[in-house]
Image (cartoon, rainbow, N blue to C red; front, side, top):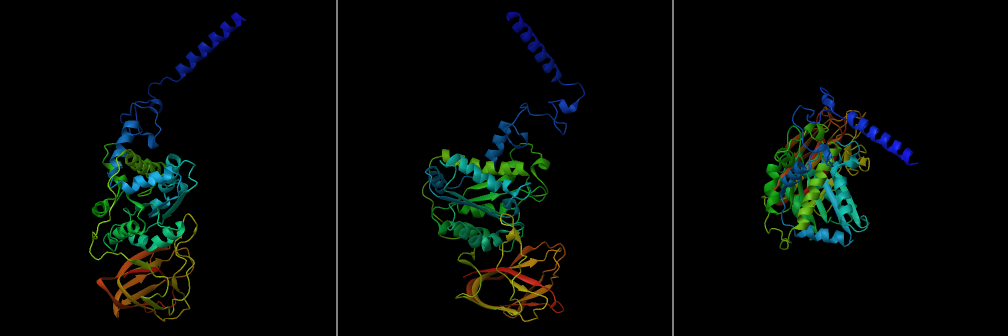
Length: 435
């Protein structure tokens, strides 16, 4: 038996030597040369990584640290961490554009907003998140003014309350938006005022080609002393070489791995706050940052004490408005639609307001109904012409500001099909006003 054991041991030793030799680098074989990267540069000395894109521990730490543009006042954030640890009910919402919706990942539920919710549940809740509720309210191609219109229906109504955690992500969509960051400010201020426990976080995503407009949003978020996370800074200012072709799926949307980095940057903000001393109780600034703020904002769903509507030829409902990934259904089931046989009676609205936001649809080219042009008059003056049949339309929303004044007053808004366009469709997707 001893002799047999010696024979087996010798055989194992010989096999180990052969396996080790087979793993040695073959001269001239670049695919197995660990000293080279895909681009021919020097590789990290770390051959294995637990991080997305194979980034080393040291470099990943640089990315995480650079992602925190500002920790802000941590009072509300630390309090919500405490609530999660205690197993109390906590609601979390992410409001933004297509990046928040999960675009770029093969499965939209691998988007950063979903991944971040999972990380919060795993780290901070004692029971796997039985009392933790998530609402991912991303919608492709939409800027913060549309987020302001959607906030009540897509966040508050879904959760049954103003959330405990609210991420706002519009930095890659807000270039040239019609309110000049006033809608972004209104989202922040309204959420902070509506729930004294809401922790608002500004998230600045990144775009491969056109970057973002965080430069315009940072002064507003800093004024409110809310935490800010910049993925653009994490990727471009950390000093770490990140292969954009591996991070991005296209010109703006991250792949699953890119979404993972975004989620972990947000998680790093929470971990840093968790380890820091509690700041003084948060106080909302008495004044607003911008003049003519879009506070006291109301979405128009019909007549109210300040709005009276005569639908005219816009009395039907468009069932093909822009849909949201998580439901696969229209995100605007309430709208005003003019069909080909609805005549030319105008839509007329009497309204008392300071500001009025107006959204119409650019018809998807695959749909059979042909859309046309409509004209919008405010107090008898032509304000704008809208082409609902614009080439390249994909049921996307287009938002404009029709009224923008210092104080509220009475106005008449009239919408009718342009000459020669009566037999075509047009959809008023949504409207909202500030009192």
